[in-house]
Amino acid sequence: MSYNLLKGKRGIIFGALDENSIAWKTAERVHAEGGTFVLTNAPIAMRMGKINELAEKTGSEIIPADATNMEDLNNLVEKSMEILGGKLDFVLHSIGMSVNVRKGRAYTDEKYDWTTKGWDVSALSFHKVCQSLYQADAMNEWGSIVALTYMAAQRTFPDYNDMADNKAYLESVARSFGYFFGKDKKVRVNTISQSPTPTTAGQGVKGFDGFISYAEKMSPLGNATAQDCADYTVSLFSDLTRKVTMQNLFHDGGFSNTGVSQEVIEAFSE
Ligand SMILES: NC(=O)c1ccc[n+]([C@@H]2O[C@H](COP(=O)([O-])OP(=O)(O)OC[C@H]3O[C@@H](n4cnc5c(N)ncnc54)[C@H](O)[C@@H]3O)[C@@H](O)[C@H]2O)c1
Image (cartoon, rainbow, N blue to C red; front, side, top):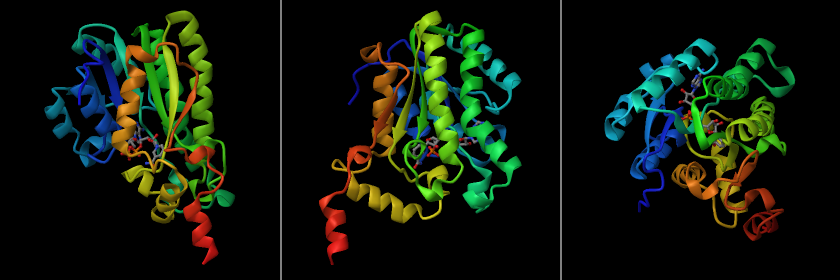
């Protein structure tokens, strides 16, 4: 179903790698709601992913940008405004990567140059995106910037490793930049804390299959899917949520406020 919630709105969507990506589903949903956008991803992901397919489907242009590189980001912001014909109304940061997780290095044995790289890609990049948009005065009033996060920022999930620390930093950037963006430009900045979701980044976490089933049983509404996340993101890009800012918004079927569920009790009573 489509409500034309984003008719006439323009934006940038980071992080669509393949059809499982949360950013991919969001791009499709934004397109269905009448929004236009530029797609972007790291140059290396262009070769591995299928972003051209998505661009064709949604009538979008692609501008490669490494989200850790200010030159790439400034070029992306400037070119996007040229292509789309004006300032932007929405931006999705859907980027995450930990070298320690990828290489199976334990939290108690981090290799710190890998930690620094993962932090730059997953957390500091959000500050860089915000700063590039802010300094170029690229956002329209009542625009909306959203980044995706995970509850390991508040509670410990051992296999999430250094990504937990990265997400805590990311959420803090949303609050801090949200203050300045709100005061100076009337722009919202929020994070969505999403259920475990079977994507390339999600499945990179050790024990993901067991964990996603556990979360499903612990969530009264069940896990939020990538499609659900796309719907929620559209609501945050729309004019219906104009006073929501500097928030970390749980989108997890109720998982974050559930102590235990009947299904989990039963599993331990056998
Ligand atoms: N999958 C989950 O379980 C889950 C749960 C909560 C939050 N999230 C978050 O959702 C976001 C999207 O991840 P996803 O699950 O859709 O996985 P995904 O693997 O499809 O997306 C991650 C994206 O980050 C991009 N990326 C990596 N390095 C980059 C760089 N230097 N510059 C620009 N882009 C870069 C990748 O190319 C990829 O497109 C991430 O922030 C992730 O942490 C995922």
